[in-house]
Length: 307
Image 1: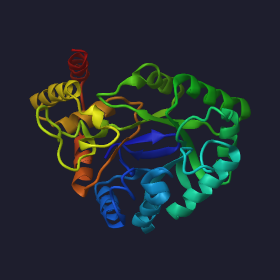
Image 2: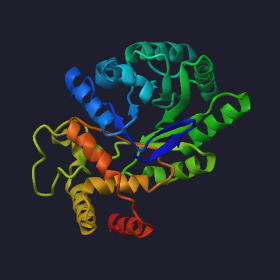
Image 3: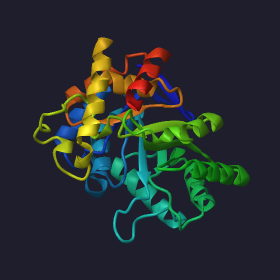
Image 4: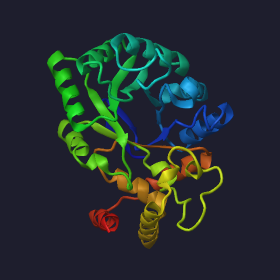
């Protein structure tokens, strides 16, 4: 599989998002998913302390990897609310959160430690300073951020340069064929400063997997059948999905191929970290990344989505 850089890390262009571990997937199902990823050649796993009922995702991932930990890269996140005391980007909390994640993962270091969301109450220089301590101690290899705007990326970059500390080498924001906000500055900024971009919800919560069809009910048990993002399953979105599906089929590809191939046509994107609930989905995600899209393909997609 193709590999791309996140700072000093060189990871597979398809990763595994671990947000289902400890929630929709129990310990046994998590193990099957992780081993399917390893068998398919994936070496990049992205989780967070809040995934899977506050910590279970990290715990299940660490146990599933076992001795294979040395063969992979683990990214995790901190900052979102665990409880009334554990949240944010205060230096003293960062130290605690990192130790907690290391313990749950059963590892001596985190390859990519990411601030899950900006903390307006803490100067970014203080946050980066605490993260730099973890890097110098060997507990973290690289640091990243998530849900950052262009200005927040610039502020963080300036703070790191001024204080001679580790810098954010990646930003993880929502990005897919159906959600293209990062094109309004963030992708360009990443290219300018050499920051890797990691898209979350790359399959638009499942809309781009191919399982949803206009005029048909959502499959029972699917993420968009109910829940907080069910409103995405509307006629306008499904109309765009059908147009994209038709385009992919005209090129002898699937909608899933299109979703992965389009994202990976952007050099600044380091890895597409889609989640999966079944081993077959992991294998399909890896296969989907094989489509090398042309500039003409990308231009045609832009036309479709503007209509």
